[in-house]
Image 1 (cartoon, one colour):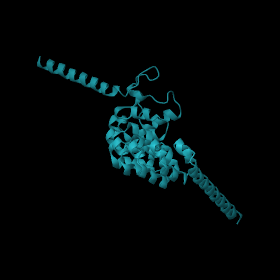
Image 2 (cartoon, helix red, strand yellow):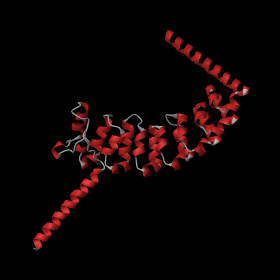
Image 3 (cartoon, helix red, strand yellow):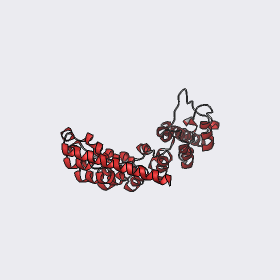
Length: 265
């Protein structure tokens, strides 16, 4: 009788653990007409096999049910999937184990792999997006990473300045906190560094500020179209914009002439 009780308890524990494992994986599984449940012997043995199935179009591109729990945690396996560039971020992060959303190396791999794929940061853990050092690293890949930084970092002038210095320049301001886009002296510094295109991204109140608009048209004449309508007809600003345009045109002509002369010699 004692042994029977032990057997019953052991059976109950086994069944309970099996159900727990199924429940754990359920959120990652897709079961429908196109993705039927996968048998154990149909599991992809490695990333190359799965990639081959995708590249050579053997049936469906992939069946997420055919990815084992260990593969969902295997960074090398997932990294290979990332580099074939056929997976959306949503597909990839549905496959990957949730713990990897906190893994700096994995998130970096995904962002780097797909040509400045900063959208992958939307799936990163919130703690990572608050991490100044990590997000600075992301800014060096693409300044648009600012979009997914924490609210505190978007208010941080030094952090936003690093974004402005990055590969997308003043357009990074579009993702900065309003307090920065209202900061006249910060905006003037951005214009001095990256040009008058910055006027497009600043707060509307600064588009009424003559000093800001003047600084913008001195480097980018077309910026006057983004000024408040009360300044768009300002004759002094129009004169500066026209003078800048003429100066830039003459500079361009001189450069083209120098290029032609070097080719002729």
